[in-house]
Image (cartoon, rainbow, N blue to C red; front, side):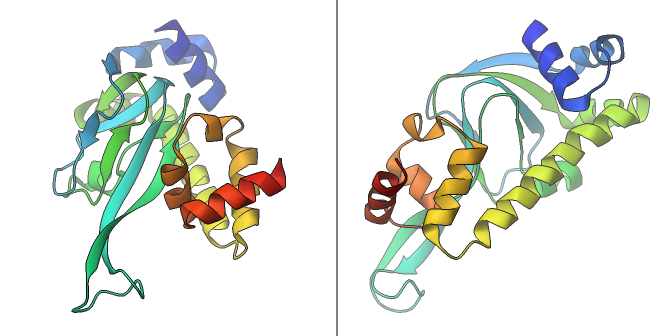
Length: 199
């Protein structure tokens, strides 16, 4: 739990003595690569803090093979990666977790991961007893959401890739081209071509 303590200190900028009582609300968990931690339709009972590894949240949509629109033609399932979160970050379906409503996402471990499980009842306890810590943790999530919106607003795919590389240095070597392409909303061939340009 020492790593979790240090990461929470870095995240919240609070002193260790203020953070140590919070550790009781987190349970260490190890998961294998490809482990599914949440599925659409399930209520998210857990926010995951990543000690080591990478999690992603994604949805599956049906599209027409030719136009991308849903119609009577041939359909295909396409994964859209909404979030990629490495070490020292939190991931949950925020709406499902906070409002205890059915989730829209899958959450998956992309590599063997050491996680700290924080369930909804514990979140309520932290909110009541340590409101400043709960606020800072979820403020950080909002900051990451804002950065994600900024990335999505970049029309040029090479600019999205450059922002990704700046936000997550070294990440490209840890995740598949398919997953990174689905996060950047470009196809695999385009991503491979753009990677060559920015090296």
